[in-house]
Length: 271
Ligand SMILES: Cc1cc2nc3c(=O)[nH]c(=O)nc-3n(C[C@H](O)[C@H](O)[C@H](O)COP(=O)(O)OP(=O)(O)OC[C@H]3O[C@@H](n4cnc5c(N)ncnc54)[C@H](O)[C@@H]3O)c2cc1C
Image 1 (cartoon, helix red, strand yellow):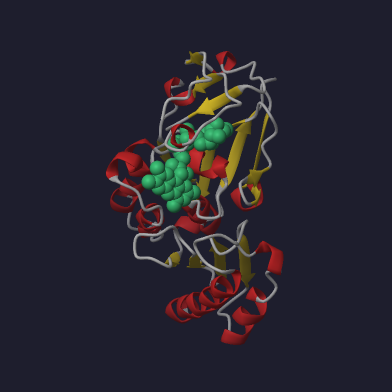
Image 2 (cartoon, rainbow, N blue to C red):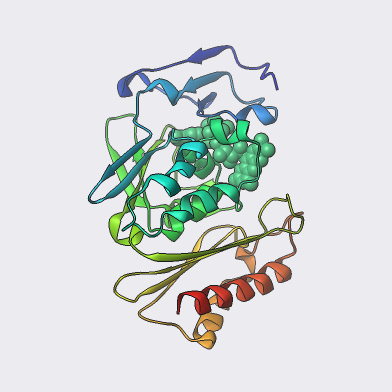
């Protein structure tokens, strides 16, 4: 769609050229959402895809994804990661939770998905399940790092202050060495996710369960060892009613019920 209020497009190639950012400026990454609906408040686009950020950096400590890494590039990790990182399948599985054509996959970025902060944000599911942290840049040259599970605060809301830019996501090696199990359910076969539940069993036996899409912000439950069905049920019952997603893609009571069912499947699979 043409954004007919946009008067300028700025394409920085260095960090210090990104700012200043004003209230009528929008960060442009893949543009798959930005160009999908009218943006009457936007007069200038700041395209961050020419900053030269390497999309994927792998070290012994884990993986860093640039915010501008595309979903297509994220999905390749399921094939290319060393075998010791047994969580590798999760990268592609989470990309498939965002049902879109190959054109969207090749354009949409991990950062754009997280900054939109929709309940069905598939990259939020991925990052939350693997304890990823987000690094944010500020215009004054400073920045901060925090868990993605805390970055998203509600339906299309997050911690970003005006003028802040998500730079990268870091996945720790310890989580990448875990065994994982993934479940997604949607009311229609090609529909937006109603619930995404992911389990992780770490090398030290800890069990981590993350719930997204069913809830407006990520919920992560940690168990010191194999959890019983009743322990999982008790943990999930702590999700407050107001945190269940209410939209056309599933009623809140359905979301709570399917989350319990999927969590039990995952618990049994990873026990
Ligand atoms: C067919 C189709 C299916 C889709 N399905 C889903 C779905 O299932 N779940 C879902 O969550 N979304 C979905 N989307 C919405 C959207 O396309 C994706 O969330 C996508 O990942 C957004 O990434 P992008 O790079 O295109 O973001 P953009 O459209 O470029 O930007 C999105 C928003 O994030 C801001 N932004 C982008 N990058 C940064 C950054 N680094 N720092 C600060 N702000 C930033 C932008 O200013 C804008 O407000 C779908 C879209 C289409 C067209």
